[in-house]
Amino acid sequence: MIYDTIFAKSFSRYEQKRLGYGAFVSFLLIVLSLCTVFKPYLGPIHDLNLKLFIGVNTKMLMVNDTRSSSQIAKVEDIVAEILVKGTGSSPQMDKVGEIETKKKELLCTSEERTEFCQTRGDIRVHGKSSTVFIVSSNTTMLAQNISLSIKPYARKDDVDAMNRVRKWSLKAVKIGKEVPKCTQNHSIPAVIFSTGGYVGNHFHEFTDIVIPLFLTSRRFNGEVQLIITNNRPWWILKHKALLKKLSNYKIMDIDSDNEVHCFPRVIVGLKRHHKELSIDPQKYFYSMKDFRDLLRSSYSLKRVEAIKIKDGRSGKPRLMILSRKRSRSFTNTAQIAKMAESLGFDVIIKEAGGSMWGFANAVNSCDVLLGVHGAGLTNMLFLPDNAVFIQVVPYGGFALDWLATNDFGKPSKEMSLTYLEYKIRLEESTLIQQYPLDHMLLKDPPLIGKIGWETFKSVYLDKQNVNLDVIRFRPTLQKALELMHQ
Picture 1 (tube, rainbow, N blue to C red):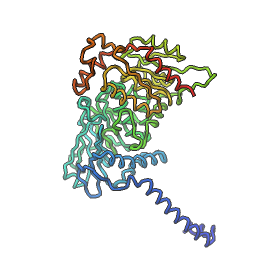
Picture 2 (picture 1 turned 180 degrees about the horizontal axis):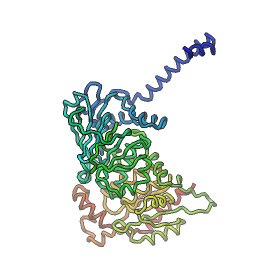
Picture 3 (picture 1 turned 120 degrees about the horizontal axis):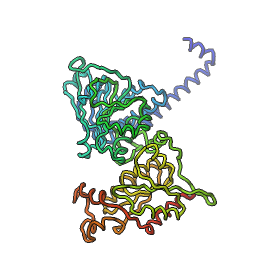
Picture 4 (picture 1 turned 90 degrees about the vertical axis):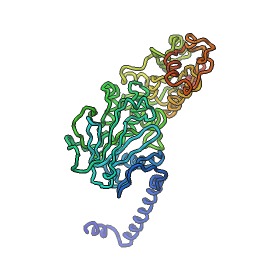
């Protein structure tokens, strides 16, 4: 009433009428804009394989169609990001699910490389029994006696990796009946993930855990409890700087915990793009640029752009040669460094490992990274934009070429890096010292499927070193140098 009086005093009747029409037209334009933006996500969802019961006012879906699941996830991510950036309030996050349905309690998604379940409501986590209880009054859901199991590691197609991951159960239980009582209450969401699998391998730590964890938890802007199963304390210490950026809270080691932790929302498992070291920005709210920006912030990396050499300006581009002590190492590192210096590079030789902080900053100080195919090349993540990444591909035929391209070649291009590849000839491989030249493994390297992964790995990855032909390799470094010039 007071507002109406002030409004009437401030404007004439004609002006009020015009403003009324204007407000109505503006409202229509806003509605039209929202419909246009969210149309791809609000349309009917086709080709879903419904593995769980769809109850009244409740969506209980096991989604196998990745496009459909990404539509659901992306709408939630977009709104979550808006809420987090707008308020920074964790209770706001619980309102996100209301866009889909007000009473959704469980949504499980199965994709090519991962599976994860999102629970909402009265969620109770018991670490010692590896169980997530979904306390519900939904009789139809309870009648189905829903009990799922999931291994929260984002490489579900790899049997060897998944054998090292603890299995978790998700059970729907009735309020007041056989429900463990809460011993610790939390007001923030939680994400349960495993540091089992291939943890200890730098490449797998990033592609199977760190990047998926970023995709799953970044939306909460730190207001999320990270819960680790198959915990390796050294892993937490190694990635401490990045983990602190993802969560404001101490990481919870859950496996031997006999407490019952109660949360309003729990995600079991991690989201992941099916390609290695990659993020699909069309499917997720984030991109590899966002992830690399977070890395720069986590490790205080100073350089965003690689050097650009202009005519008449002094300054040498820095080249890092990645050294390896065991397999796939350069046997003539000093010779390679000398040749690179003669071309005008400032050369440093380092082996990956040790302090993540120190090594990340060392890589970031370089304009070119050179190394033989292997987990250490994952450190290209720390290079500045427009740097040159050179992968030396050992002898091994089509199978090894495929691994090199898909593990590092293609991902590097999504990181704003320039990718150069050098495939060695048989004469540059130390395999010629182990097998006769007419041996099948040298004459025609077989596909992995013919000899098995373990045999392939043993021969071409574990037993091979590289004696680089510096004369043949020289044009590759010259190309890298050309790319440094504007």
